[in-house]
Amino acid sequence: MEASEAAEGSADAELEAEIEANEDLVVQTKVLIERERLRKKEQQQQEKNKKSGEAVFDRSVDCRPEALVDLGCGVFSKARLDTPDRLSVCIGAGVYVDLALEEVEAVVNRRISLLREELSNWMKKRGEVHGHALVLQEAQQILQYVSGLSADGLASLGAGGDGR
Image (cartoon, rainbow, N blue to C red; front, side, top):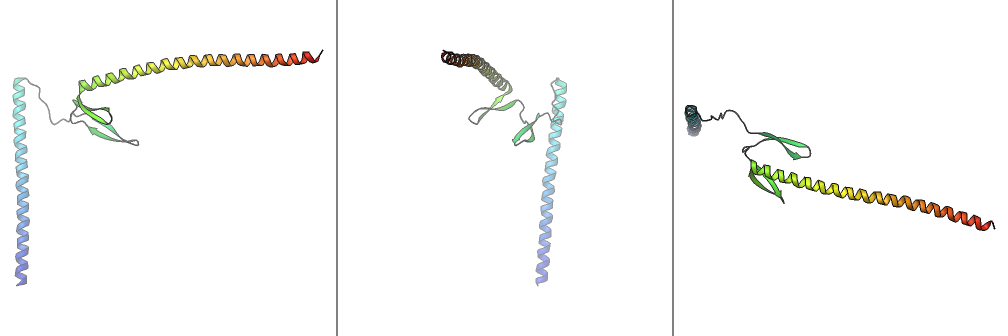
């Protein structure tokens, strides 16, 4: 009796495995049918575009821009932009906004002009500090000259006073 139950169990397992395999085959077939339907639809659209003179976008070519992204510590990874017409820009405090390329260009140009203004201000301050340093250097030379004269003068006065 146990042998017949074991045989029925293995037959059930084989049937279930066959059903699962058939279900997988059905799913794969549906996927292939859908891909073919989409391919035909795209082909029809391309033919229609050719007739009307519209531009045809070739989806077989990947035109997403590629860039190296710094992950830190000198480690980089390749990345592709899914939407090359929009970029995320940091506006401060770790907050990023998604902007169109024209808006990004305006933000970058504004930052460049601010950096140029800042550089100009620092160069003016550098010039002022350099001027002050020159004045201090001249004052130091004058003090050294005067202190050298006063030391010589005191020595000569002391020598002249003793000679009397």
